[in-house]
Image (cartoon, rainbow, N blue to C red; front, side, top):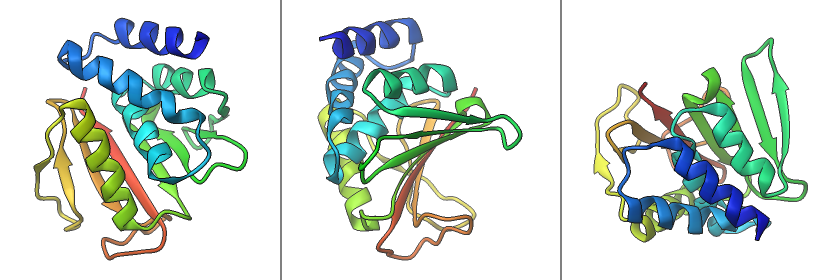
Amino acid sequence: MQLCFNLILSAVLLATPLAAQDTTMLISLAAGLTDQSGTKLMSAAAAACILGNGDGDTAAKIFTDAGWTRSDDAEMGETALYKDGADVGVTLYEGGVICDVASEKIATDGAISALQIMAGSTGLSLRSIDTPDGCQSYQLTDTASVVISSTGQDPSCEASPASALRFTFSQ
């Protein structure tokens, strides 16, 4: 109950350009952050990124309210969010402007499914966009886009046994 209240409060405070029904569905989907594995957890993390709308503290609070651990590295300018035993981890860069949802156990086709689940259940459209790296990329809202790739420092656009959904928010 406390998690739902905090998610609703966070979403209300966001003033995102999302329609009310989109926000309500994102909140409902983000409640899945308590799961340990699979595309449902990745979809929930993606929804939390969208609810964060480029604000790192807002996004991090959604995760920590769901029992995730927050670890800030000021020198690197990043915030790691993780849940012991979970298949998915999240890293926020540039104060939340980038929200990277990654899994070493979910392949890129699973990440695509997680993104489709999130978009389909919330009413967000996946408008294909071109990017210099050639990875599958979509515009989700006026301010949010996502790139699907492998994990790691040098991500690949090819199918991989590990995956990442990298959300970028324009400010």
